[in-house]
Image 1 (cartoon, rainbow, N blue to C red):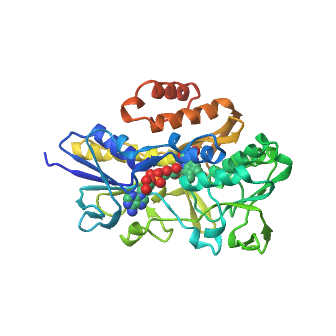
Image 2 (image 1 turned 180 degrees about the vertical axis):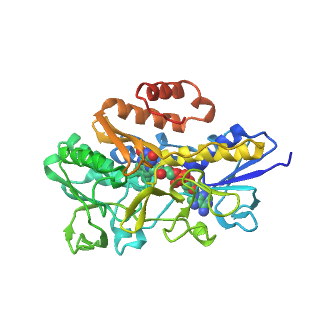
Length: 413
Ligand SMILES: Cc1cc2nc3c(=O)[nH]c(=O)nc-3n(C[C@H](O)[C@H](O)[C@H](O)COP(=O)(O)OP(=O)(O)OC[C@H]3O[C@@H](n4cnc5c(N)ncnc54)[C@H](O)[C@@H]3O)c2cc1C
């Protein structure tokens, strides 16, 4: 049997899962090489709890070296180039030849894409940003907070709404609710439009119950940090005291330079197999552009949102299909578009949105009643995600599986 090399680029949600799932399925003769530039692996959903002071930085990240399964070759290096024609990747450590390539490099944040944004805004979309925002919230005396989704697409369609609600809850706990006004701006037509109108209405209700003013159809065009003013494409100017932004996202430069992206700026893939249109290459997670069947805005297809839950499920599909192909078995795994999200509402309560994003004519995503169980589910998921591979199959994993079964959630663990 010829030994194959599968190179996985990016050790975030998708890449780490793909590398571990490949290692679990493949005989030791085949190499699984995981390339990641960061030494720490942070759990992004917990950035929100870092921002509110409910987590310390060391509670939501782990040294990456402890997370891959034994037998995964971890290369701590930056990916500098991808040469699909030569089946080679160059990194800051060494060159890696591959038979299969899984690109899971995520999305870069690009605050520089909007004039004035970079120097003016806080963000809970990065580990460092969330830690800094925690300090800013702790000393904020009161006033107007603008939470702004600055451009589409962005990862985790629920996160801006959760962030706004957790900020509201933070000030309620401090007895400052009367002194703080929170406004949420977005270019979208409703909260989480890709998840359909029913979910949008439910999230709008959650925001209203927290006293958050929701402003759809506002696309940020500039920020003036001196006068603390936002300017939107529709001409509105808005004064703020504290600005919290979800910065624009873009694909990492190396992926664009390799010619893997299309006019969407992301890597087009088959929606079910995640195969890119170059031999042996797959793209999963935030880097992938997956059109939603039958849905257009007005002449551009709507894309599957960027979320860890999808990166995770896609990684398992790709690992299964590559392992099957190497073993000469028929490949049957297909990504089906199911997704879920525990939507933190503050006060240790969360909603749970679950459904199929490929459903036609519109996605069938529902919000289950807000309660403590969903918040607990998110906490358990955090513990499970950050556990070393050996521990995942013990107590936390079993509790998660039992919970998922009780609530009828087809969760892939
Ligand atoms: C605040 C917040 C809350 C969120 N909450 C949720 C949630 O509740 N549920 C959910 O499903 N999703 C959530 N998400 C989204 C989720 O985190 C992402 O969708 C998910 O991480 C995408 O996985 P990925 O593997 O595509 O990318 P990532 O996890 O971002 O991994 C990409 C990796 O590639 C590495 N990399 C990039 N460029 C290079 C390079 N040149 N060389 C080497 N390495 C490189 C990066 O360091 C990174 O580790 C949230 C995100 C944020 C910011």
